[in-house]
Image 1 (cartoon, rainbow, N blue to C red):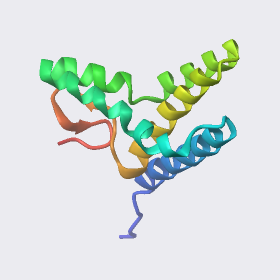
Image 2: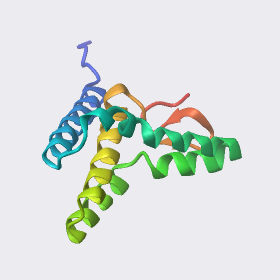
Image 3: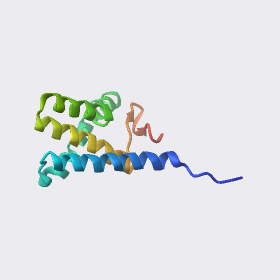
Image 4: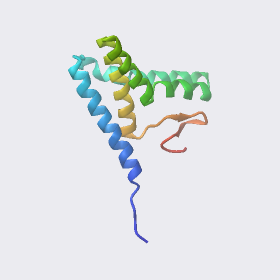
Length: 121
């Protein structure tokens, strides 16, 4: 039997790294303050407070701030409005999702916080 490594996990981590690097470059080009970069990058994790309302509400609120769609939509809105603050916000959201995927965090199922689209608890 030939051993075939699980390359899917590798590619998920690689796409997360690429998104994080791209977001960092865009953040820099938009003139983002690097002293605020780390706190801003961690800000979407405040959405975990939704879990105080239970697993279903918690996963809904968490997933709202941890998917590619929202970050890209905010970036698109920033381009459409020509608004640098909105562009930076979208960049941070997009970068945060990239960071999460890089380290293996995924979207949450309502069955439990550790039950994600990348791994089942």
